[in-house]
Image (cartoon, rainbow, N blue to C red; front, side, top):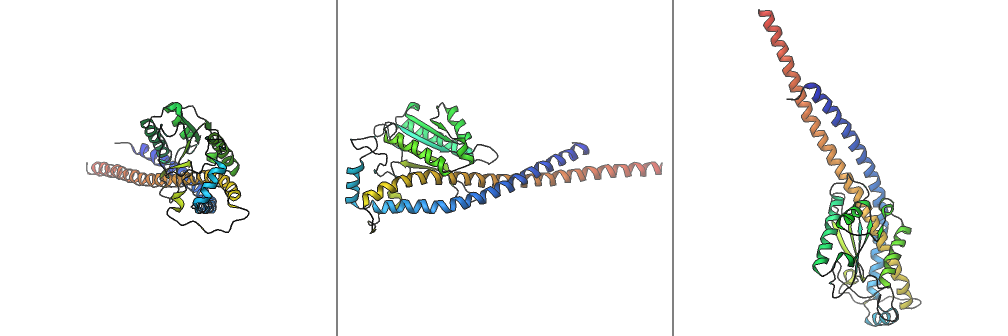
Length: 313
């Protein structure tokens, strides 16, 4: 059994640790409120913008006209980055259909946020394995890492990163999102990649941040307005001009909202992790205090018995 001095030293150490975890929880909670305010304003706007686009593109005549006007990314004479093919929300392509794929994965730069980074890395490696089963090699996959932890996972797996955007993980900004979206769209329009996937943690609630995989390009339109009738919009100046202007905004806003979503999910995960750590520290302090009191009581009892024994003798 540990001596009373050792137990007392350990209690002091755990208390200092609990002060740190409590402070980190308060900081993470404050950052979470700020991040929730940011994503709370942007996500509904991005979703509505995407639904408007999806509603417009329910019109077959408009889609045909846009196909003729814009073409398909990397194909045909009028190739354009804003491809209008519709795909399933999280479907993976096969090598026979798509020659090259890009993965954009979002994580944090630091630890102490529970399984937040582990879940993103797990989904990233699972996606790579599924792509390999569909005929792809590592040379056929471009990886964009937003966050140091997923960058380390990709490098350990053997990938040479197409981009390592650690700054955007801690400080999401529209400019950073616009630059990343521009790189992705340029790569798509040039035919360098024909399918782009997003992998990140979504802030479902403070206690839940599920890992999500979504298709970025081609656009997954029917997930937003599946089975709906063509929206009866009054359009000025004309549908094609409006869609040309709307599509780039949708693509940039998607990247920006994912950055904000992943950042908010990180702060939520860290808040919960630090709360759990603080609770565990408190339980450990209670156990050690009980052990210390028992040990102290035993010492007092032994001293009393010694005194009593000496008095009797």
